[in-house]
Image 1 (tube, rainbow, N blue to C red):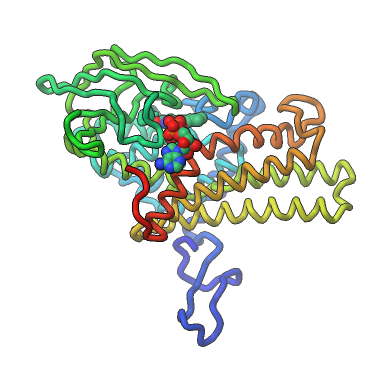
Image 2: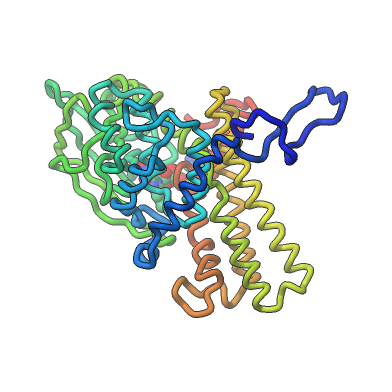
Length: 410
Ligand SMILES: Cc1cc2nc3c(=O)[nH]c(=O)nc-3n(C[C@H](O)[C@H](O)[C@H](O)COP(=O)(O)OP(=O)(O)OC[C@H]3O[C@@H](n4cnc5c(N)ncnc54)[C@H](O)[C@@H]3O)c2cc1C
């Protein structure tokens, strides 16, 4: 898997004379992609000081602007971007390896992940003027982007957005409300879905903007969630935005949004399943300490969780491979997101049960399993089955893209 071309001892090959020829699956990254791993590992060893560790949180609130700039200086932020916008044209698999190291260090990828998706979409659809203004700031680690799609009346049915943008000369005036605009209290831009033609059919008449969050008329209110993850309601009242912040054609926002959503549904690559693995490791360490390791049924349950963490990792890489090789989508991203979320929910519940009563102790409490990892996974896993598209919507995408069934959503 990955960009590797040679034969690896860990590769699987079909037997001689198999009807498929010799399908060849790599389970390791190429040497070129791996070459960045020592740099990334060293970066986190050097920069995650005890003070930084005390502030770390696996959410947007864990975003640290100082570390973000240092990541950029080290060439670890968006390495595969074109040079003219601040990247270094690196092999896209290097970004996957770096992401694995982020997860290994426990460093949040929330801000970097959403910003990367938005920037990739600006690269594909933005005007040259917008790219030159925004992308270098992002690649230097000076700006991040939040996603402004969901509204009080439209989440899964995202194309039903009602937030209005009305043209006024070379500006647009935006009025409306968004729900769950995660990171809007920290980011510099919000990637905003608006309705520009209310008379057009639902998927037409939509336009995307990259709105600077310091524009007058924007209000950000916190929403706290079960998983200790702050998100926001955002309000837009007479927000005036120059036309240069439009991303893609007027009334053609659906294909722009589709590009960004495809990236969100598992196209990021690298680091998938890492939280699941931490859950398995935390529970295994507890089992050894508590004497439960000698029980074969306990080891079987732990082995099951570790195996599913590995499947999650491989599905993430597989969906990224589909994107990098530009294959037409066959539901790989949705399959990856669905499995990662649902398997993590089930296994977090099972490990909560296995390690009870210690598993109910939260981070910071003496005796908490894995420093609170099991308790956190139990709460956090549920959110993963909602944001970025719920599990039901992922099933619908798989039915449509992979099985060729008729579209079930309007
Ligand atoms: C922690 C968190 C962070 C988030 N961050 C962001 C963000 O940064 N930006 C952003 O824009 N949004 C964000 N969201 C919003 C998220 O994308 C939506 O919550 C999600 O898409 C579901 O939409 P909804 O809440 O309106 O639920 P609904 O769409 O009302 O769905 C309710 C239930 O009905 C099911 N359902 C809906 N339609 C169908 C269908 N056609 N077939 C079968 N079942 C269906 C859903 O699966 C769900 O179980 C976040 C949400 C959470 C919880």
